[in-house]
Length: 330
Image (cartoon, rainbow, N blue to C red; front, top):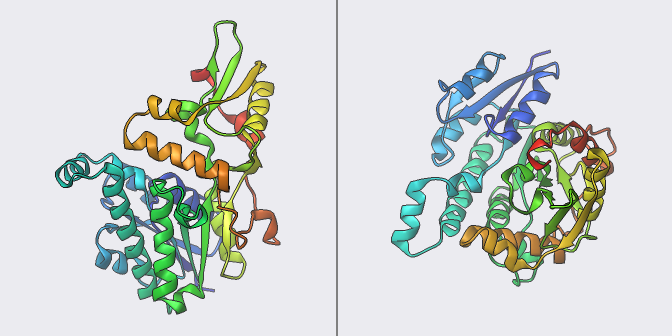
């Protein structure tokens, strides 16, 4: 039996790398990874493992079409925050009198469309297209939250696919990866803060009782993707390791570390002061959206791993907390 080919966008990042890990361990699969520079160290690490690394740029649709050619499965992902980090994008924003977030939004929307175009170009060989996305904040909040652009940009690719490529849609499933459990490493509000008396506070501008999906992306995106390949297309999956509240997360963290920790709900303004400018505003809009409308906007069409009818290995937040080195917080 001949091997099948999976093409992975973002193989040098957390999500794509997780997908590659799973399919490397699965017999019968060849892996083609996409990188702007297949000769760099992060790409060579995959080449050394037997992955075919090819050059393509998310901003160049034709290069993506060549990279996707002949794929049986394709995994697509875009990274809003990578564009926020690019100095040239800040210069463009300043020149145009816009925020860096708005420039990054335009870039991510176009990159998502380019990935969809590439998948459509090889639809005859495709068995499954898995697109990493997030829910439409503007739609599910009925226009009340408008600056959660890294969510909205990803959903634009979904809308484009559905409107443009009906044959591709028949072979597509969407993956909404839960809130990254690793976000605490960036500091900010998610990291527990030690108090003078030796206790800890987790202080976030969100109702501490609201449950939402949380995920270890590097560990589990591959499992979610493999599941979407193994079940019929048409799924809109929330990639969740655990669905829990901040108060529940804090209790797990305190129990594991042997620390007393208290959750406090902070005002939105505290986050915007901690991270000033449009990035802080966007993060505050994201948290407000999750708080008021749910991570998935309460979309009735979403499913969770336990709804797929097959076993989906994933990391619970108790397991994530247990395996993580919390020294920076202690």
